[in-house]
Image 1: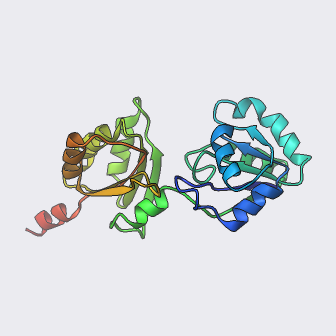
Image 2 (image 1 turned 180 degrees about the horizontal axis):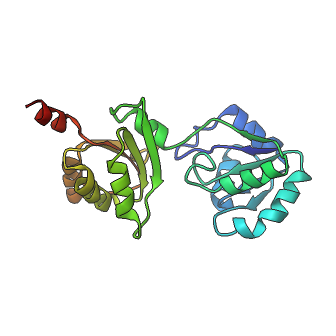
Image 3 (image 1 turned 90 degrees about the vertical axis):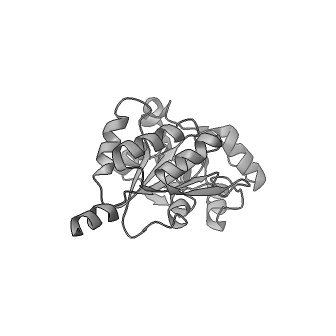
Length: 230
């Protein structure tokens, strides 16, 4: 069996009892960065051996790794933070394991966009999770696509591209787009800046963005409705 185990996105207390038990019982743990995961395992007294599994080696080691999982009773996959497969490695391994009829389980747990969405103040009944936007090529096309969706939108962003994302948001969705930019979720300096895209942009122009961001936003359609009524 391969079990996908979510790990904390910041606060080490955000581990479930079941996740800790699985990591203790596993034959070995596949870790995106063994140094980061090593700190988590040490915190909970887990001594299970680890093996690196990340975006830079997954294609190369995949065939041998699946064979190794076939010969094991229980293997856990973790990433540096959050749920494996959600903007993190995991999909390729799950797909290949399923081809070999290896049982897959995924534990519920930390995922950064869920708390960001829940506390955004924007509608949560229908949303689209984009994940990380392309750094350069294809970025404008993705914003054009997002602008055409009638729902709440979610992206992950590094502090170095927050201002760029807000500027492109204004360009393609409008300055009055409603935004909730959350940073450092579950950590000591967690905060959420809410307002229109232009207001949030102004905030981060005067205060340098720091930490990892989840930006939740929704195009303002009320303006168009009111003009149509007139």
